[in-house]
Structures are given as structure tokens and as C-alpha cells.
Amino acid sequence: MNTSLNRARRAAELAALDEVDVLVVGLGATGAGAALDAASRGLRVAAVDTHDLAFGTSRWSSKMIHGGLRYLAQGQLGVAYESAVERGTLLTTTAPHLVRPQPFVLPLTPDVSAGKAAVTRIGLGLGDGLRLLAGTPGRVLPPPRRISVAETLRLAPGLRAEGLRGGLRHWDGHVVDDARLVVALARTAAGRGASILTRCRALSLGPVSVLRDELTGDTFEVRARAVINAAGVWAGQLDPTLRLRPSRGAHLVLPSALLGDPTAALNIPVPGERSRYVLVLPQGDGRTYVGLTDVPVDGDPPDVPVPSAEEVAFLLDAVRAVFATPIGETDVIGAFAGLRPLLAADGRTADLSRRHAVRVSPSGAVTIVGGKLTTYRRMAADAVDRAVGLAGLRCGPCVTRRLPLVGAGNPDDGYDVGAGAADPSVPARLVARYGTEAALLARGDLTPVAPGSDVTRAELDWGVRHEGALDEGDLLDRRTRIGLVDGDRAAALPAARAALAA
Image (cartoon, rainbow, N blue to C red; front, side, top):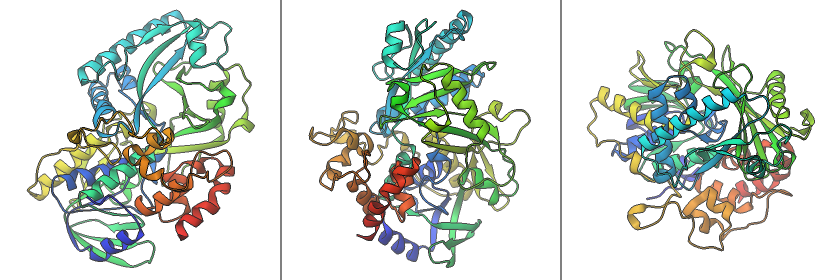
């Protein structure tokens, strides 16, 4: 199976595009997941996006693949269980090279009362019960427990020690890079025969949809027996009957050294909130993300959301409350924000259900909205089920729960999906991001693209040849995340241009 995406393949498939069984609009996690789901059922599939793979919300997550603990606290039992099931699938079968267990610690600071700690311990125990019900082994996600002051400080050395009573440790899932998960989905779909077409805008949807090649400006028609609108917060632009109420979640990027190089993520309770936390998430590349906020967004959603000054201040206040080192705005080396595509309802966006919804527009297109990164596979399956049912398409059942993504290896071939690359000489960082393909990248130029960066020229070359990168932004902002820090992006720009010109 040919999983490579590149400019030549795009041009050939775009030229041949005329009639398909399923047209998918949007190539975030859900759209790429829907393309894979439909293609793996034996259907002819084309999937398009105005911009690039993971251009929208999917690349702006907290990088958590979580088991729904917060939803459990809110009484959303179905959403919580669904999250736990999908987390286990990603950890053990479909993407164990990208999704790994992550320890979390809630530090028991003077601001966390004994009562709050007791309630949290009960919640963590219930969350572990969800893990058991979902069938995720304890060796993958160990049960929660209280830890000592010394162990808490070992996992997060930068915490303020004064008044610290230890911590509550639990485990959850963490994706090394959410955009890379989307790339793996898209390439796996391409390997099953799907046409993955970026820079291709949907102008109207229906039995005959109108598309435009954003590179040339040419418009053309595509006949599709079923259409899936997975455009996220932009879905309403293609289905005017849809009422969305997006919310913005912002993150800061801080140097990990400033926080004592934590090895565990942290849950910092938000004062006055029952089940909201600020997350401190070490990324393993010298950066730590701090997030996130929940702010309603009015009007047309921007292509690239930007955190507000109030959100930056809120997140910095939360970090300063528990860390010993004074941290100010000048310490922030980057920031990003994503928009959640929530269905409109009364109340705060923070309280709206994260359950996804499948709607049918007057044009007959199936729209999938809501949900979250963790449950993209279930969302995609539900959308494809509805679309093929409406269209009367004959196809096989959903198989994506057992289908490893590119880089995960194939358990049927005897490959241990959790073992990483067999060659110990392959850099561990490449294994963590590329899985079984890491050995191929290691044959390329491993020169860093910028001083102090771990990103290599081989990764940029790979992005152009096999991952569909068409410009510098694709390489620096999505295939790699070096673009999160402006100085690093500028330093890596010549290498990106060289890779595109090769």
C-alpha cells in the first residue's frame, strides 16, 4: 500500500477526481478519521481541506488523550466511558507509537483543602474504574495513589515546597504531537486508496459538490453518493442550519527548565471551580505547555485563533500559585489557541457537553460536530455509518478499532506495537514521532534545522516526500512544531525552503 502523500500524487489524484462514493470535507482528526473509516470499508473516498492536514483545531489541543475524568465529574457518564475506550484503543492498538502513558500529579498545596483532596481521590478512583471497564491494562495505565512530598518534588522539582503535603498521582494518555496523529490518519487512509487533497476548498455540498483548487484557482464538480462535513468550527459555513457556539482554549509555551524540568504533568485546581484545572504539560523537547482556558467566541471563527491578554494572565497566575520561580510574561516563548466546535446551547461554554452530534443538512450532507480529539475514531465511525446508510451504499463494517496507523506496525506480522524501532541506533526522538518508519528517517540528514533544536533536516525532507507538505508552514507549523517559537521558526526557515526546493 502506498501511503506517501506529496505534490505529484496530489496533482494526479486531483486531475482524476470525478465521482466517488464518499466525499469528506475537513482534514482534522475527525475528517481524516472518516476518510480512513470509509476507505477501509472498501469505498471510493476523496477527502479535501481548504488548507492543510491538521490546520485547525486538531493541532491546538493540550496533547492529552484522556479518559474522561472531567466528564465523569460532570455526570456525563456516556462521554466519559467513550473517552476511556478510545484512549485504550490508541494506547494499545492503533497509535502506541504516538500515544503514551503520562503521569499526572495534583500537588496538595495549602490551597487544596483536605476535603477537596478527599473528593479528588474518590474521582480518581472512579476514573480508574472506567479504565477497567474499558479494558485498558493496569500495566499500561497504573492505578492512582497518593505520593509523598519527596516523590512529588522528584516528579515536579520546581514546585513550591512550603506547605506542600504531597500529591495525588494518576495516569492518562498523552500524544507526542496531535498534528502528527492527523498525518498518520491521512496517510493510512491514502494507503487504503483514499484521495487526500489539501489546498482544496469546498464551495458547496450536495450530490454534485463544487470544489476549488486553492493553488490554481480552478473550480470543478465532484459527484459523491455521500458527503461528510467534518469542517469543525467552520462546518456552519457549509451548513447554514447548524448553530455552533465555539469556545477558545488557550495555551502558553514555557521553557521546561524554568519549571524545574518536570517529568510529570500537573493538575492545578482553578479556585472556585469544582472540576476545572490548569494543566502543566511537559513535552519532552525542552518546552512545557500550560493550559487551558474556555472562552466563548462570537462571530466568524478565525483561521488561526490567538490567546487574549486576559487568558495569558489567567494561566500565568495559576502557574505562579504553585511554582517557586517567579514567572512573568517575558518568560513566555510561545502561545497558541484552538476553537472547540460545540453545539449551541444555554449556559457557559465550559459546561456544554463534549458529546458529538451527527446532523443531516438540507443538501443531504452529514455533518459531524462536537466531541474531542480522543474520540475522533468513534465520531468518524458514527458519521460514516450515517452517511452510507442514507446513501444506501453497500460496504463492510467499521474496522478502525483494530487498524494500526502508519508507524504503529502490524500486530498480525508479529510486531510489538509498543516496542518502538528494533534498531537501537535509531534516535529515540524519531521513534517517538515516527514509530516503525524512524529507521528510514535515520538514513537521512540528521543535522538540526536550527541551533538548539532537535528537529532534523531529514524530517523536513520526509514531510515533503511522504507527508504532503506543500509549503514552509506545513513543515514548520504542522509536520514539526518548531514554529511555536518565533525565533526557532525563523532559524529553520532556510532549511524548510531547501527541502521544498529539492
